[in-house]
Length: 342
Image (cartoon, rainbow, N blue to C red; front, side, top):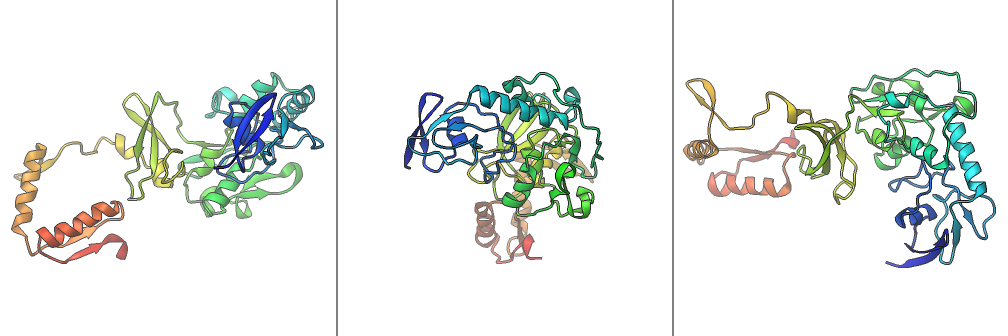
């Protein structure tokens, strides 16, 4: 992989060919405030907080849109940059709800982080008076456009990654907001409830319902289908309270469907089976694994040659392969079908 060399704040930085200035800085551990940039999305340059000074380039370009070049000299901090960023953050806060302690994204909010970094401690401009209705129609997450900063991450991930296009920018000027076709509730749109918009939202505009802060995260694999998406389960005590995509997984790279992201509650359900059950005298009773497997093997042996197997899309290719080999080689029948065929 080819590399380039540039200078950022007096430091010699080696970056991969094709990186933007923002990506090169962040990879080198140099923080530049940003709200609309995301490694999974095309550069957008909407928030303007990632502005820098680059020798040979006029003005203050957004570092998320400027390709890093060999020999480039970049400054991420200067009196002009500080003043401009403070003004930009102050303008965002003027049109932003101020109930941070009650917000589900408190201490996880990129706007909070940026405001603290640039030194904004109080409002400089009068607070906007408009109040937009909260869309609570989706069973998994809530849309509160009073907290939206119009970074466009939700719109872009829905379009560029998911290919759904359920939401977009609607209206113009000060009336611009994120909405659906005909401004209907999100539940009435094309939304598939994958939650990618909630995962990408840098503020509290889109938040998962009943969010709790986890005490730890456990890496695992989603059990809903055979794709094998990587998960990070949020655990509090002994209870799973949320799930997020594992960016290190080569299968899904952090993306999830509605089942993987929000279908975790069965783990905590009181009716979940944790031990084998055998019916004795019409009543299901707990049994050991050895006893249960012995019973299954005995019953299967009684039906050799009079057997059919139904494979499942929830299993891996390898599991389904073993099932058809078992059906043909052990149970002596070719009656193998798959649930997806119906």
